[in-house]
Image 1 (spheres, rainbow, N blue to C red):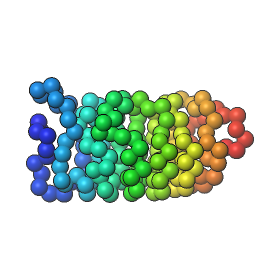
Image 2 (cartoon, one colour; image 1 turned 90 degrees about the vertical axis):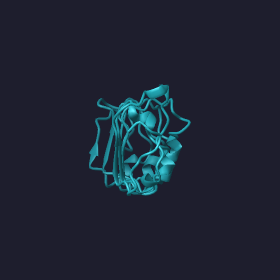
Image 3 (cartoon, rainbow, N blue to C red; image 1 turned 180 degrees about the vertical axis):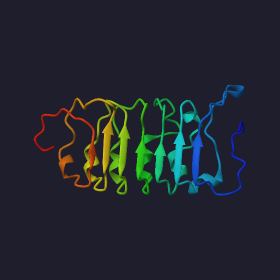
Image 4 (spheres, rainbow, N blue to C red; image 1 turned 60 degrees about the vertical axis):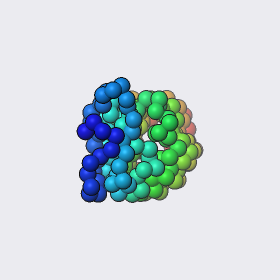
Length: 168
């Protein structure tokens, strides 16, 4: 649609933002009362500008953002990721972020973490005891992961890494 609100009266469980709205030169996040119950959100660039703040989602389990360049911090604050307590899948590929916020450690149910190249992990990532899949970019890491990452016993997939740390 082209309005700032969604017309659906029902509860939205799966939500995908795919198009760019350039009408009238405005690019504001969508508003809807029904998105609070969304379980899955997938966005594609350049529709990322239409993404509501993370705090709008109460029970989100899947979040797949493609193309966020960090310029929309007024409504997409990565620190708010820590409030998505039910999140199990987080994919932030093709995004321009240097480091995940410390709040990522609050996501106790997170199982999949797929990040862009050169993203640094905060020390709190070792609290993600249910993490099964961790990948940073398509190449190898060029820095040591946080101490204690070897204690993530549920981890089944770990992207290629080049580290000097014995603790891994």
